[in-house]
Image (cartoon, rainbow, N blue to C red; front, side):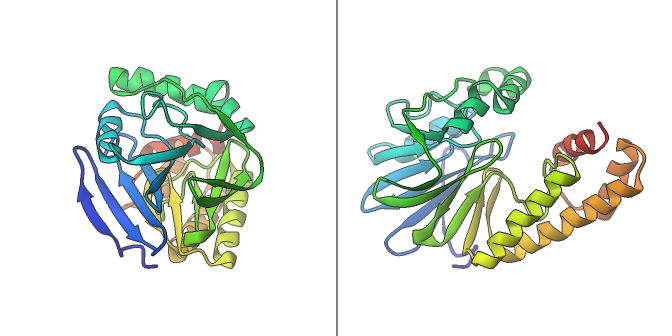
Length: 263
């Protein structure tokens, strides 16, 4: 599956990219919100499963209109626990650690920050989880998933379309890298994706990517570690990274990365 082989549908805000795998369709929603969030819908036999939630009122309204009259069997809530006004009647699924992340941990801290930054445009309500997921296989709405717990929440393998969902990739943008050890963990994860040969890699903040993009990110992370080892402070580090990657977006993520490497 070519990552550019999709049909585009314009929404009230943002746009939907629809990939047709035959028995299953993937609807990838680019929200166009200030955080460049991405929400995914899996469609099979007339039923939908939502992967992640939009968190801004405008994208909640746009995606809600897109799904109006459709049969939504459930929602997987991993890293984006906010946006509770979106499809409140639909059953929500998450792992225990993802629930804790959204209600008490780092996810809750981010929700507070975003609410302070964006005010009423950001829906800071946290989704109520009806079904607690364990590591391993689960079927929702006729779609088979495989849940992989992570430190913060969980990633999702979707075998029927040979795809995997994780929080961040972004082959030409900065990511939040919480130090050298975290970078090594990300590299190991991406190398595993390449070994498994996924068609698409889905992330919360980027359009669907492929294995070439995974390799680009591996190269970036290795270079990031090298740059960090040669710098004495965060400002020098940021300046050198921006010089090496002038076209990369996500400078706010680079600021956070610098804070981790030079706490």
